[in-house]
Image (spheres, rainbow, N blue to C red):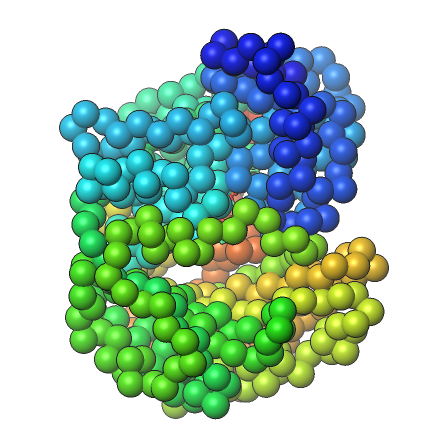
Length: 482
Ligand SMILES: Cc1cc2nc3c(=O)[nH]c(=O)nc-3n(C[C@H](O)[C@H](O)[C@H](O)COP(=O)(O)OP(=O)(O)OC[C@H]3O[C@@H](n4cnc5c(N)ncnc54)[C@H](O)[C@@H]3O)c2cc1C
C-alpha cells in the first residue's frame, strides 16, 4: 500500500521500496520478518485509516517503523502483520519562521534534521548517531550531546500530533491534553501513533568534538577522569559518552571516548581526559551535523541485544575500583566463550554520565513521565550491547548479556552498601540510584514503566486504559508496556 498524493504508484518501484523498508534494521534479525503488507502513510489521516482497517481484523499484528534502530527484535518489525513505515513519506522537517521550533516527521533521521536546521544556525536536542529515527528516539526519552544543557529530547517537544487507538487525531500539547503530553514524554508507544513532533530549536554554530581511542592500559586513568567529570560537572556545554569495547571486528578491548563541546573550543572541563595518551583522535572544530555524520550507521549487519543499568556515581576511589572490576567482569564473561559458536562480533558497554546538573536541566525543560530527581545524586548510565551473526545465539545471548548487567548491579549493591552517590541529598538508597531505566537503551525484559515509580506508573496505566480500553496498541505490537 502506498499513500501519498505526491507519488504516483505506477511510477514507484514498490517492490524495491518494500524490500528496502523490510531489510534496513539496526538488528539484522528483523530482516527475516516478512510483513503481510507495508503501508507508507503521508499524513495523520492515513494513519487513522490504517488503524480503522486494523481494528476490523482483530488477529492481525502490526509494527511502527521510524528509523528502525531499536535493538530489540520485533519492536519495529512484524512477521505476517502490517508494517507501518514512516519512511519515506513522513520525513518532513520544517523550521518555523520565528526559528523557535521545528516540525519534524517521525521518519526523519537525526543527521538530516540537523543538516536542515544548521543552515539557519539552529539545532534540536536529538540523536548522536545520524540515522537513528526521530520517531522512536523522542518517544523513549532521547539523550543527546545537548542534554546537559537542555534536558532529554522528550523534554523539548512542544507539541505532538497523535493518532489514538480509536483512530482519533489529537493535537497534544501542555494546554490541549496535558496528561497525554506528560505521558508521551518518555512513555513510548502505548498511547498512540505520533505523526508529527514540534521540537524546540536552539542556536548553534561551530562545535568541538570527535572521538579519541585508548588502549586498555589507560583504563584506570579513564575511569578516574570519568567519575570526576560526573561529580564535578559544572559546564553544561560539555558532554561525553564512553564505549568500552571488548569485541569488535579486527580489534579487542579498547576504550573510545566521544567528546562534545557546544562551542568552537572546549573549556578546561576535559583537561584530565586530554592528558591521557591515546591511540587515535578525530576531535576538531566543525559544524554539528558533521560531527553526527561521522557516526552515521543505518544497519549494523548483526543480530543484536542491549540491556540497561542505572548506577550511582560513587566517590572517586570507590567508583574507579568498581569500574575496573566491571571491565574485567565483562571482558571475562561466559558469553565470550561461545564467540565462535554464535559468531559474536560485538560486545561493548556505553557509559553515559548523568550528573545532577543534567537532571536539573531536564526538570527545567519540563520533564514528563521520564523524570529524574537531582536530590538522588549523580548517576552513571550503562548500556550493554552484544551483536552476533548466527541465529543459534538468538535465545541465549540476550540472556547472557542480561546476566552481565545483573551481576554488575548485584556486586555494586553488595560491595558498596552504605556508600552515598556523589551530590546525594535524599531518597531511598536501595531504589533511587537504580531507577529510572532508560527506555531507549533497555532490553525488552526490563520493566521500564514500573521504574518510573508507582505514582507515574499508575498515572500511565489509567491514561492508557482511558485512551485504549481494548489494549489495541499493547496487544498487537511490541514495546515497553505495563
Ligand atoms: C547506532 C545507535 C545509536 C544510538 N544513539 C542513541 C543516542 O545517542 N541517544 C539515545 O537516547 N538513544 C540512542 N540510541 C537508541 C535509539 O534511540 C532507540 O533504539 C530508538 O528506539 C530508535 O528510534 P527509531 O525511530 O530509529 O526506532 P524504531 O526501531 O523505528 O522504533 C522504536 C520504537 O518506537 C516506536 N515508534 C517509532 N515511531 C513511532 C511513532 N511515530 N509513534 C509511536 N511509536 C513509534 C516503535 O513502535 C518501536 O517500539 C541509539 C541506537 C543505535 C542503534
